[in-house]
Length: 330
Image 1: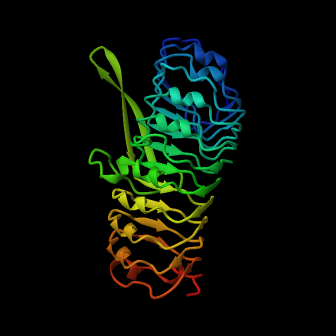
Image 2 (image 1 turned 90 degrees about the vertical axis):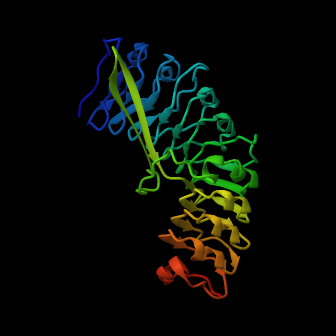
Image 3 (image 1 turned 135 degrees about the vertical axis):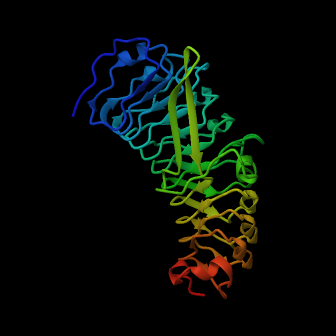
């Protein structure tokens, strides 16, 4: 294990110490680097409190990746209004408290990952104002309360990954939330897709430097799949019909909630869907014949509900064994 000392070179723009065996606290002297654009200390054993100056010490920082460490305390609370953040990752720490509203100042933010912490808060509705946000990852925290309707027609219009699994959110799923997810409605030919790996790692974001004339240019690339994961919460009510509009969706997981009513036939319009998990709810009625149209489906679970009647036959639905349907007495 090693430590990092005081930072002496103020002209650094790209600082990557990821995936080492470093420990201890991050010195506040890091905030003296007014030209810093990328700071990646992920996958180490850093501990202590994250220096709160990291949210506002310069206007050039694009990437702040502190994931997979042992940080305690809270997320920096003061993000400046004129910041340039495009990527914020605090996943896999022991951070508590609330999600700071000043993150709404990060108008260029594309990816926000605060999963696997101890955040105790209601859903951060102020994030809906981030019009460039493509990935919102908040699983395995202590989020609670209801989801309200979208605050504007453009709420989360660029979002492609929406993961709030393993929290304590409750109430019904608002119709207009899914209607506003415009990036999931029409497939985006400019986004490359990758195979799903773990539940929380369904995107990749890489940054490297290249010479451009006499200057160094940061090149940021990303690959992701479109995914909604609201599993393992306390949601009630029916599955919103508006989910059927999200034709570029690859993964949908609403399992382990308290959803009732019928499975909407409109889910059969999700022609690109590869994974559908509605298990461990209180869904009733029959499995819609329209789901036969999901020809790319490789994961399908409706087990442990209150479904009845015959299982539709044909295409992909013929490939799943009885475990996909078990626990439905009808």
